[in-house]
Amino acid sequence: VNDHEADWEKVTVYLVEEEDGEYRPVWVGASSHEYLGDDLRRRWDDPELHRDGDHPIIYVGAGSHSHQMLPGDYLIQVDPSFLRGALQAWRRFTARFLPSSSRLRGIGVPFVDYARGDGVRVGPGGERTWTPVVIDDTTPWVRGYRGLWGRNTRDWFDGERAPSGPRYERDGTVRRSWADPLWWVGLHKVAPTPESARADLRAHLEELEARIGEADAAIEEERAALRRLAAAEMVLSRHASAQARAREYRARIGEAERELTARYRERTHLADERDLYRAALDSGEPLELPPQAHLRSPHLPYASGRQRTTRFLHVWATLSTPLLLTALGAVMVLLRGSLALLAALGVVVLFAAFDALARRRFLSFLVGLALLVVVLGALAGIIAAFLVNWRITLLVPMALAVVSLLYINIRDLLRR
Image (cartoon, rainbow, N blue to C red; front, side, top):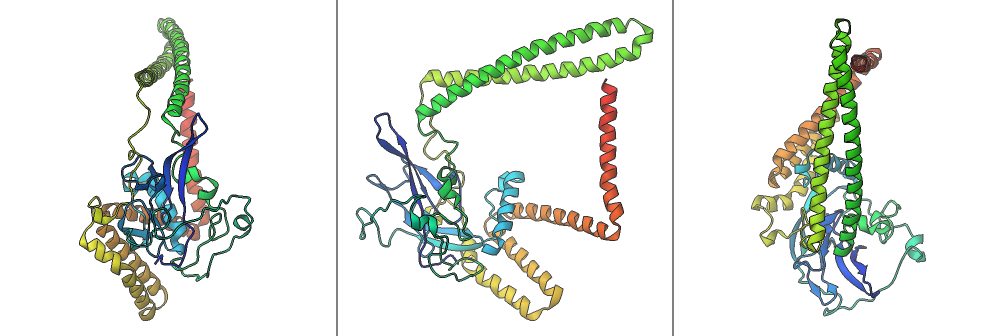
């Protein structure tokens, strides 16, 4: 799994231009399997970023060629290529609805990535030197060749399949990390320097001041409208023939009061926010977080003592893939027809449960599995109802839509 002869990997140093025209490194990003986002980068002053002068030291995984910032053994989980689309959809779902389970990567293939830093060193101070070659979108071989750099083994796991070039994915599309290197490591949201962050905050403060002015104007207008309604209601309430109309006005007054209260609350929040920004700008403190504040789930070697691992997890990472393939092979040999398909599905779910248990994410796995069962059950129910009587299947949502629209219209009518 993920053991091939060569790879195109990326180590990107992000620079800022100083006032004197010189460039200064501020971030380093290093590719690691299919991972994306903030955890791929380290700030130049991060104490865990090993450097030899101006050269960042990156530790390469044996066989997988993935990059790590610290030496050690890493427990990695990669996606089988034939399940990659489904797993990416699953991660988007868990990130949106189960944020506490965002680390859960789904059903993947675990293995140990050895990036111990005890092999050949390339670059300054190493056994081998390197020669920089400048390439960009205009380089003919970079832009013109969309194929693989080696043999296409067509294995399901993409483990021994040759890599594509620096610009393209294996399917021939442009790598997003090539087209948008800031997105790749989550740097679009990060100001290049504390000074530019201060300028951005001043611009945001000006926008906030404008919003406070708009809120003040809206408060004046809504308060005047509320007083007009109260004056009208006072006159109507004096006449028996206008009591129904007076009740309508009282309802409108109550709703207007709630809206005005919400407007005052929002204005208060905006003013408090403005005061915090003013204090930050007046204090003169640099608008910069600590070097590792952006890290949420950094890649750490399990030998570092900072990852919660167990002996069962190490054993599972070693044996799970052979056991899974053996179990699926036995199902295909011993069973036939739909029973074999159901048994294979059960084996996959069982192995996923053991994997979640080994990684101490069993509760998240159960929640995700329950949600998946509910969604599949609802889809199956809709399909079954459509097969039984398609007219009823269409009429039920139409009836619900009619009832909803009728309720909304009646509510609006009563408010007038």
